[in-house]
Length: 391
Image (tube, rainbow, N blue to C red; front, side, top):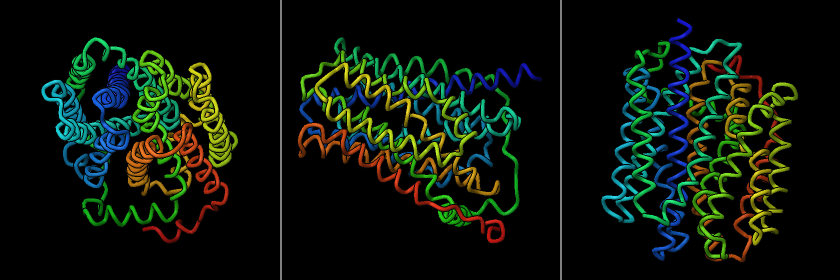
């Protein structure tokens, strides 16, 4: 029994790692291909939003679909959508065709992540839940850190990164067939589509501040992976250097993810989030000053990753601190929605900064966003009245 549960856990974690790899590969590879083709940085940034528009589109339906189909079908469907879409990129190099593929990948990735994250949460005992979810985030981060290294393959062929990624994703996806399907715990009064939106409203009322760290993480992640390669090429930083600088942020987040989680347990989520947001603001401001140095940017990205690379998982933990258990599923979905909104606005605003503002403004946009989130967390006062108001 324990062996089967362990196998299930590592298969799910492996799937998430490959998903992180494919996402980490797509953003910089497509950005570099479009930049070489002469596409403007603004359009390049807009194109990167396709993945997260797909996430936003499917989010309101996820809870009901999961209850009806169970964990295994939703993960298989999402994973297959990702594999097929990545494999289709070499077929036709077109702005809008690739945008549609990105949108489908966003839908598939969200199905995969929502299914795996909820499944791991459901079978993890309370004393291991934090550890298991930390490993979940850790392996996604490892995959995401490896993904940008595929930018080197663009020098050989534009199609090679997609071919390699689709094959690896297919192998990982096939392992899910070994798992036995299970269903989440059923509860009355949760099947209504409109009741889902009612819960979203309650969640926003009591835990809105907890959605800002996932928003900020999405903003940073897609700006760095979608906009930075364009910025780097325009300022004379070559593709090989980009493949070193970009993963340093993800590696930094991997190194410090578990320690930050443990520190938040000891000193409080609000205190840790406030601290890392303020230090992240300082770190990206320094990156703006060191914008022409490959070594300086690599070190700045690494330290920034150590500080703010775990803000998505810290935001989810803070949300769980602020809400009753009945609203946690809706809270998790809202974290994903705000992450997607940040992921959509990040490349767009970053692209505008690169195209119309002076050098270094790209980094200052990120640092200013972190400063605003720090201020919001610092002034937030949690409400305890939900205990009598939420039904």
